[in-house]
Amino acid sequence: MENLFYAVVLSVLPISELRGGIPYAYLSGYPIWLAYVVCVSANFFVGPLVFLFLNTLHRLMIKWQFYDRLFSRFIKRVRVRTSHLIEKYGFWGVTIFVAIPLPVTGAYTGTVAAWLFGLDRKKSLLAVLVGVCIAGLVVSFIIYFGVEGLEFFIKKIE
Image (cartoon, rainbow, N blue to C red; front, side):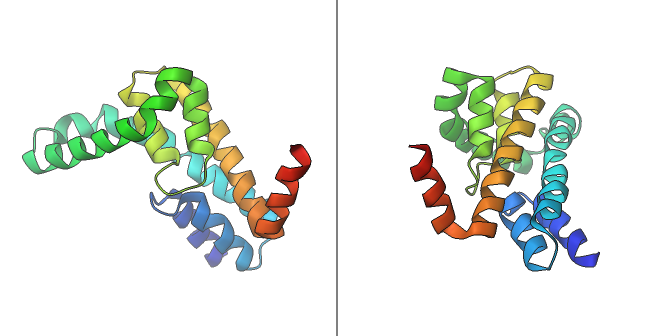
């Protein structure tokens, strides 16, 4: 159980998210379906927590110059990385952005982007959930079948 706890922790950390949690759980001996369910569930809770932070503590902390500079730089990067998808596709843009299992494209950045562009909170959380589920499937597929299995699957679709 201890390793599953570590997988949950990896799934909610901004750097690793599902890319760290699912492989860790699977390589620790848990079945891929359990790794998927536990890590995706943990990673989804990032969205509500980020919205809670942005609507409460952020308003208090923005008064601190250090935090304001740090947050402003982060927002600029989020805007550059997400504006093309979210301005064009809205809900689906958030989903696509979160679904890509690469660094800085997960639930944290997707939720902040939805907040930044003023999207509806409930729809944004649904978009993050769908994106997290898709990213979890991609990571699970790669871990279980390897990169060759993913390439084979993509060729069959085309």
